Length: 496
Image (cartoon, rainbow, N blue to C red; front, side, top):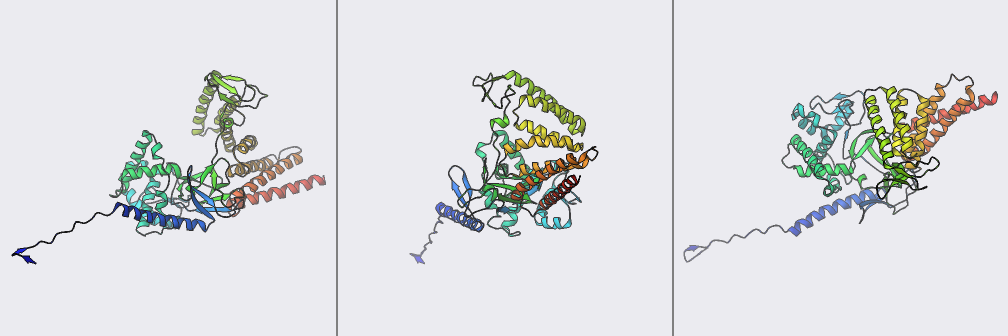
């Protein structure tokens, strides 16, 4: 339109910036939907997430769970085997036999083409990234670095819908994990930043930043779990975001075990509706950490004096000098270093001798229930087994059981496994001691001891491990074998 011969320009409307409130509402809606999906998935399992002021998110039950019943199981969001320069495991199933290295990246190992195919969607991007890396940097690609690489690759593949996501299997769960960055010292922050820089260098994705990676390393430190076999030997590391919601307890009502890569939480006692699921964490008391009283007739433990001049027995009041403790502790440290050298060179006979000297000194220094003394006896047990000295191994195994019973509640996988080890050793002693002149009663005693230990192991492990794994079937077979042999030997003695 023209007015007075002049063209009237139409005023441009300024675009209003998106309201911050609207953006926050949108984010809140997405988070709300995510939490609703999670609640729905957990409700189907008889569980719910509740926020507690002193604990944050916690997992509660909405129905009864019986001892031994599975509360929840989860596949890892990401996981890696604990590979080292001398020991490797399959990236998929953690097997350690029939392994072949990935021909492209030279980092991942697989035990079969089936395992390799199962991991290919995730490994393809990792493989390309690692193949570009200079060979000199391959030693820097630790399991922790690989875990972080896999974490970002899985996020990318799920966001691009290459692999599926679910309410209990998505990156939003990782975002909600606690990181404790505010409590980390400067040295650790620098380490996380260096590790983040390496991950960034390997992936070379422009949308990533070192700060985000460093925060995720802190989350892994707080929330990742060590994946173990049925006998609780470490195999790898995995991140299980839903299971990470479960709080730890000194008196747990549930335990975590692994079936392959799956993390399984089982009730070890009756859990009524409205109870919090609490996974086990051992809190060491002064008895388990402390020194023994100098009075051999006293079972008390020592605490440091207020003036820091010595340690006073909390039962009889006797004081043990600081110098006495320092002197024995120094001897233990020196001999322990020598023992470690012997173990490194696989000189088991010398290592046994050295650790026996350490145990002798620790019996003078430490409380009978001391964790340090128990750990030394664990080493002596393993060395004796390496030397196939079953009788000596059994002696040390029995010495550890009383400490295990104090450390752990009645139903705990570590206690059950120690009874299992004891049963195996008692069985081996039976079949080693066939040279006795009058073996019948002696061997019957060992067989019945083995039967008792296997029974105690089975009563605990059927609750913590379930009964369907190959490990539990093997234990049941050993139990039946011991029962049959004990019955046969009893009838033979009766006939005599």
